[in-house]
Each structure stands twice: as C-alpha cells, then as structure tokens.
Amino acid sequence: MITEEYTTYTLNNFVIYEINSNELVLMHNYGIVKIKEARLIEEIKKWDNNNIKSVHEEELMDVFQEDYSNAIAFLENNYIFITKEEVNFSIEKCVFLSNNDEILKVSQEFLFENQNMKNSIVNLNEESNSTLLSEKNSNTLYVVFMNPYSKEMANKITSLVRKSENSILLMSYTYNNNFYIDSLYSPQASNPCHFCHIGHIESQLRVDSTGNISYQQIIDSIYKDEPKFKVHTPLNKNNILNILSLLSNKISKYFTLENGRIIHNEELHECSVFDLQTNNYYTDYSLHWELCDCYEK
Image (cartoon, rainbow, N blue to C red; front, side):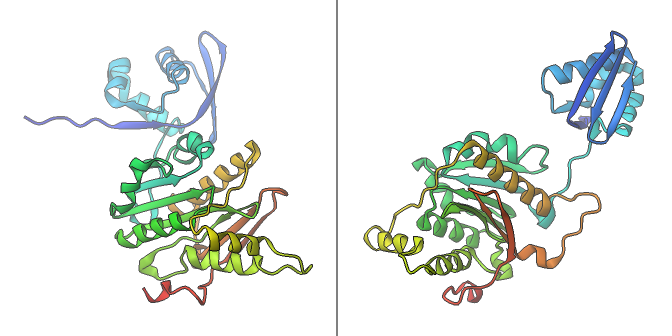
C-alpha cells in the first residue's frame, strides 16, 4: 500500500487589518496584499488568532476543495507561505547551552524562530544534563552563553566539540561587564579556540595604566584559592535583549543562507565584544594565543 505524502507549509510572520467582513489586508516583510476570498479570509484569521506557524496540505485540501492548488499558488506567490532557509556547513542540529536562567527562559523564542534545523536547549545548571557533555553529536552547532563564566565548564564544552565530527562551537560569555562572542571554532580547521580568546582577554585586563590592581589580577588571585570560581555579571532586561539579538544575528549570518548574502573567509574569524554599560560594539579577528596548543591538535 502506497502512502501519499503531504507537504507542510511554513507561514511567514504577518499582521492583518480587517477593512470589513469581506475584505482583509495582510502585511508582512515582503509587502502588502488585499484579500477578498471568504474561505481564505477565515483561514488567515484562524492562523492569526491561534498563532499558527505551519499549515498541512491536507487542511488546505479540505477547506478549498478543487481550488486548493490555486490557493497554495496565491499563498506562495504573495509570500504568505515561505520556504525555510537552508543551513550552511552541513549543520543538521543546533544545541544551545547556558547556565543563565534569564537567558534560558526566552532562548527558544528568540534564537530558533524560522530556523530550519533541529534544536535543543540544555540547562547547564541541572546535574542531569552533565551527561550530555559526554555525548558525541555529528554535524552539530553548539551555541553557548555563560553567565557566570566558568573555565571548567568552557573546557568540558570545548572537549565535547572536539570529539564531535563536523561540529562547530559558537561560544559567548560575559566578563568584566562585557559580552563576548568568540569566532566560530571548528577543530578540523585548527582555528583559534575559546582558550585563545580568553587568554588574550585576560592578558589585556592584567595591565592597569594607573598602577592600581587590575580586574584580572583580582580574578587571578581568587582562582589560586578557588580554581572552580565562576565570574558572574548582573544583567538587566536591556542587557538580555541585546545579548539575544547579537546571538540571533550571528546564527542567521553564518548558518542561514540569505538571498544575496556572501560570507567572506575573514568573516569566519570575526569575534566581537559588546560593552554592557555603554552599548558600544566592537569587532576584531581572532588570533592563536601563544600559550594554547589548539593549533597542534
């Protein structure tokens, strides 16, 4: 027995305005369209009221009967149905890991909307998830946000990525009232790892031109007494919104194919810092740290 396969269509984000009971205006990121067909008006209002994100072909066949092909063509031609973007680097799955409860609460909605890949969220504070750090996954993008920052946890995550075939790490964290995003780390490419980034950051922070004890010197002295110390940065709602926006933009830029968007090789080595107090944003290019041996691995 042959089972017929039906298509699932992805709905674009839209806003509707009802002119009257027989006319509806629909607006989205590609433009605006006026709709007068009664069945279509009812369906669109239902999708809007119930926050529907996808529609099955069977449902459209039931509603529009012999007109369903024309209905689908109209919805596609007017960008009400959209094609989910393909993913770069042969990535099949995205795992978001964080130890920050505020970020974890809203990460699904902010980071993975309209992303065409499997995704999961790992709370690093839960002991039950510690076993996940020993599970190898191929073709996986690991996106990490740490606040508090933990070198021990960063080492576990980096080791996991090194064991996972064709996987990439996008590491982000707060440190010294800044939000840092490392360049993409691929063990197969032997590019600078997280400890190259944090090594350079710590070296810069150890120097204080005023002659006073520096932020990093204080952190170093604490590490000597407590190697598992975690560096915490208090975040307000504006900080959280900026952090999620920067992470979402980074994921879209590198892993979702957008029309006309070309990524140059040097951009893959781009790292950034966002000042959580002034909202100033800076980018640079990653370099290997002389005291890290990741280039040899």
